[in-house]
Length: 114
Length: 115
Image 1 (cartoon, rainbow over the protein chains, first blue to last red):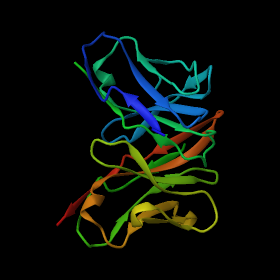
Image 2: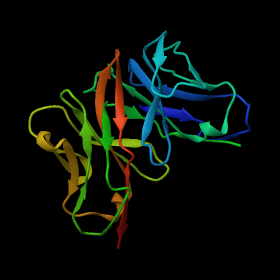
Image 3: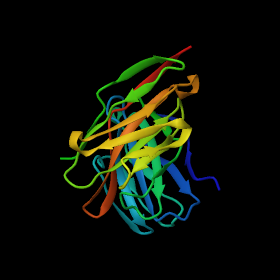
Image 4: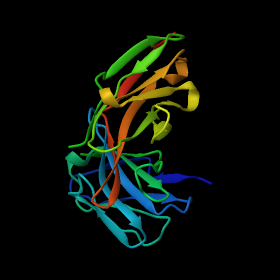
């Protein structure tokens, strides 16, 4: 049981490049989400999914796309990277998604956009 | 609007000393409260959570937190800090809004431990 895994751990992009951050979980969780962490701001929700085929926007969705074709995977796509997207990205999952439910976090991807 | 405030950005304590990290929240309904810890280069690990019932909750690694509704606070405590507790600590409130679950995080408190 690996929990929540994320790849890559580190990535450097040039402005305008695209890339996909991968996230997978093996706990059969329905709810998955992406957060970004910036200094002095805690974590902010980018996108979330309540099950395969269902996604929606969080607080800071601009510049990011997601899809959820399987229960296990929830990739985050940057179509045209900007320096403002330099951040640490965390994927999280939980069983149902209600507030009492504990969210389990992956180890994070540190992204730098030059 | 919902929010979480962690007033202390950095705290330094000596190993063996007691610790209290402050957290205040703003939320109109019954709060679901969490403390997470992030060690350098690592993801977030849940320390403890409060949903209802006993206002003093015990967590992992010897941490506890007390929910005080009258003060809108959920402070984290440990009686004797170990060098391995050096990390960043995040308080969060769980909100169910617009059909989805969202964790609203504070900005974090970075803990340094002196030998």
